[in-house]
Image (cartoon, rainbow, N blue to C red; front, side, top):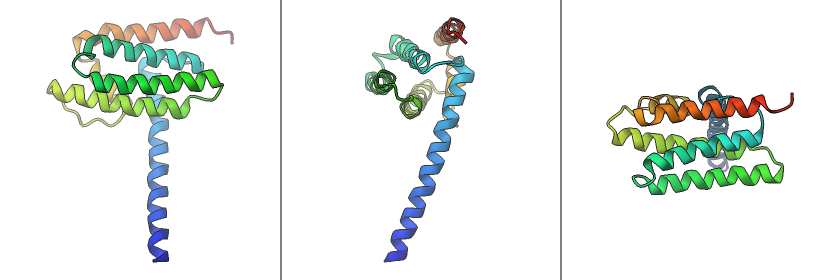
Length: 150
């Protein structure tokens, strides 16, 4: 029985490490696809803009998933307001975004074997209604970061 508990703990620990590594990669992918967020505040704003864009285009079609994205984004705001890092809250947002992207792309008949956040954003860029908005988010992040004292 003791070995069984130890094995279960070991499996759980390995899964936890894999999930943490995956979430770290999601954050790096967001920087590449939507502009490098130079501060936690700008990272929150970037994800707010993404949520608002998705709500504008798909809010009526996917209200529950948009609501979940908004909840994850609100968690990021709480982290920023508390002066805590947004890594964990941001990773939670990105994981929820992958769920949203998978549902949207599947409904559009687009291959949904998504490897993560970067691939999700890349796949969404094929939807004509999102191309300009995604590029605008990247531009807004670049402009905001250009104004931050170095």
